[in-house]
Length: 399
Picture: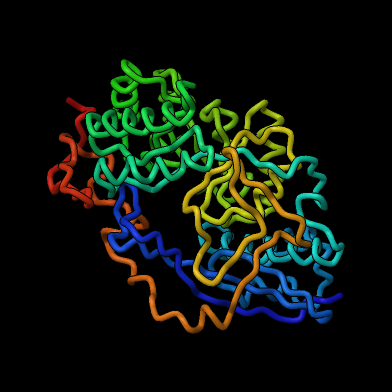
């Protein structure tokens, strides 16, 4: 079997409501999703979700190769991007191809990927994550009631702009999950997407912990700030979670060496091989791992095979338009199916027929860091669906 070519597609995740974080919001809830399809000369095609940046350079590393040599091909892709560097979206392209190759390998073996990787249990524990900073309180409650209906008893909300709003929203979600769990205490997490300084993080989380039990705070400071995350961890009771934006083991090493993270995260877009290697590194430090992403199917399969998987993020309950997945949500867990490969099926003709496209990236989208992030003196006012940024500096944490 040989890798014979690739195709790229663009579809969308249509949430049907605003989605975003402390950095910005997609007001229409239509988020772009990119797909890489890798073909073989034996008619098996693998699917990877991720960007296409520098794909000709990356694909040259695997073209004509046997796709079943996937881990060796992963390193080959890294070597082919040596000079320009493999961080950021280029790492995402490598991850998309890597995931597609694992899909091919499992299809060729006639097994679901979770079985091929050595997993025993097809159930992967999940937590709800609604990318919900743009929702009103009523919309927030409705969203998490839907998650609760699938047995989810832990949730991560987006925040970081106003501690009083964060407290109110955490209480609302807590009450929804407590009622659904018949009084059992739920897990509550807060993700601020690198919005704070170290001092702001300790003060903001400290106020929350005066009244609520917070399981973890996610990305409280910049992703590379090992000393800062360690300082935050020492100043609060909650665990510190980070890693979804780190690409390569070399970026994880300083954080782990500094004792800066308690929950090690990896993004689905970085691929299966990266997740397996990060999981092994985290396991060597006695730390759990937690995959991140809206369609983390490859990592869900891989999570069944590692000893330190904690829980995986469940964002939208529906897959991207034109994509179906051989899995379902039941009793608070992803339940993986038996289809050979990772179970993603892409309807290329349906995607080509879509008329609804994601809006062009703008300065107020979640992908653009606001000018005054980490330098706000006052809380950002809540104007309905849109967390507007202040033009003056800083956050309430510096009061």
